[in-house]
Length: 240
Image (cartoon, rainbow, N blue to C red; front, side, top):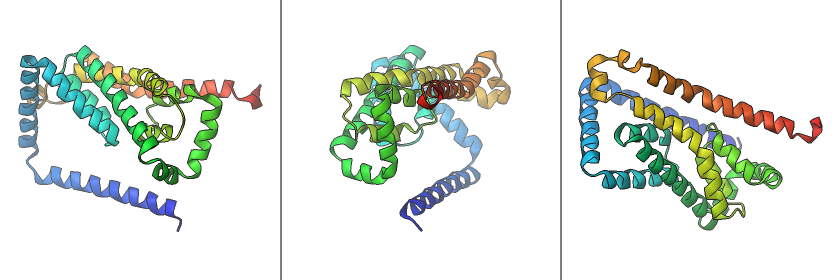
């Protein structure tokens, strides 16, 4: 069995184990008590933000940079949660700049600290990436940032193997991630407090703004993917 297949199987096993652990915890703990505790912490965070807005933004910024730079999963959920606590435009500023800074840190770490390891890890896939990168340049980075189905951490690592300038990387990344960021934060800003959700149940989520947020969350990635495929098809020399 090849090393790539072994790595894939290990990844699936790790994911299955994580899901099993989360499921077990949900069955073991008192879910009502857990939700009430989370609702209290959310209200504490909202109160802290009201009293200390700049400190709250600084903490959220730092946490988001660490999560993005480390490749820890959950950045989308973190974006939505931040918008339930911070004012909408404050969360846009925080998430947009923090995610771009975290991505830039990850790219630079790949370039200067882990280059050989990253190149070995991606193997022949890097050669395919390099060929497309040489052809499309910065547009390729921008299109990958626009498409949420591409793992952002993999993009960060791969781009560290190129000679792209930090300024160009920052601009393409921030502009490319902005549409998805705006959608995630819009949804988060429209969600009711957990305490209200606990008290009134699922109907609390069935409001036009929230339904619009979920709709955008579903169709924006599909629309972007369709547009990118259409552009790639139009630029295919074989069809011209």
